[in-house]
Length: 421
Ligand SMILES: Cc1ncc(COP(=O)(O)O)c(C=O)c1O
Image (cartoon, rainbow, N blue to C red; front, side, top):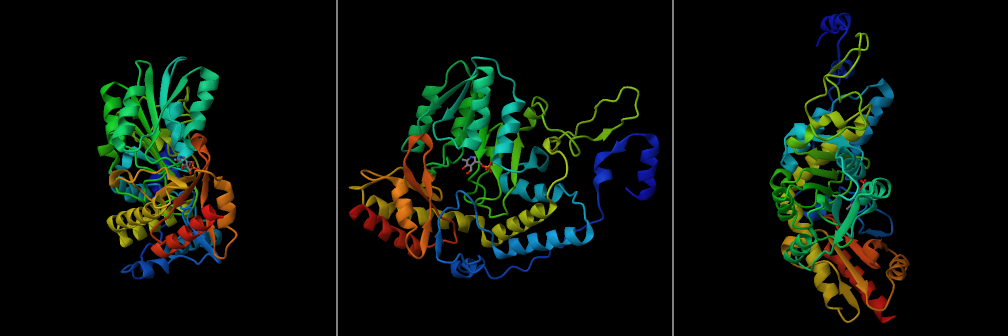
């Protein structure tokens, strides 16, 4: 829209929100990536963490140099020019194909929790209706449901994760009841990191008229998946873990049929097509016909720019290559840990289809926090995560492609030392 049309629109009273927000800005996105031929070349693209072996990507991904550069450039531009970011489209156009969905079915969020809240509060439930979950939920995946259980009397039921995808699916089916209205489960739980049989779960739910809401905090950037093929109704993910975008970015997917039936609780610019406060009876008649209606207000443009660069970087390294690499690393960790089964219990299933980039284990006779302290007492120290969810007392090793076999071997040596001590 040119200036003349813009003024004409103002004269008519009805103003297009997107046109008001647009700025004459094109982000410099020509990318000159360094070599991605070998893992050692790729490792050089991460800033060294002094005296540390970082194995907690499941909490937060570290930022590769090209992504950090995009972030810095973009923030600098905002600081110098007052540039007001308004481009919601580019990031969605890059993200959509990566996760197998149409751009119009996703909205960018701050994090997974926000996406879960959109799905949770968007669906009306009555006291006594059941929501089926796992006992291994992250607080971000379950807090909204727990609140509704406390305030509205909905019932939360849980099922147990099995030692294989088949066993998990069987446990899930047994826990369904005629009162189950929603299934809200993680694609990959934060606890033991196995890939759940989400396609089977969603298909079973759909056949019974149950809504499926998937907490997808972990898969993006770790494994290849296609949300349309998974067949869920909602999927909430984030970009700051395995995709290695800067922190503070997520997305939510709504199956197109759910759009009209999902109530919006946070609405603003980007949700509306037009508005007219001068009308006799001002009201909204024009919500955008896409998931973007859940995006309200000013957003952090430099994060979006950097996330686009993170996607470019992910594609340059290679999604299939990354998936094979992270699975190989967890196979190595699991194989070594299982040799210590006298002292250790490996909680993550070994089977290939369930194995992702995380391995969780507990000690038969020792406490996990004591091991975490022990592992931090060395130089280099190991950064791992304690798993308390599901009443586990376990250690999670979450390794990305920037980790390697030697680092895992070094960790194993510490585990052996700890169980002997
Ligand atoms: C399985 C799972 N769900 C939800 C979350 C919460 O994510 P966020 O902090 O992006 O809302 C996490 C974070 O680690 C997680 O592991």
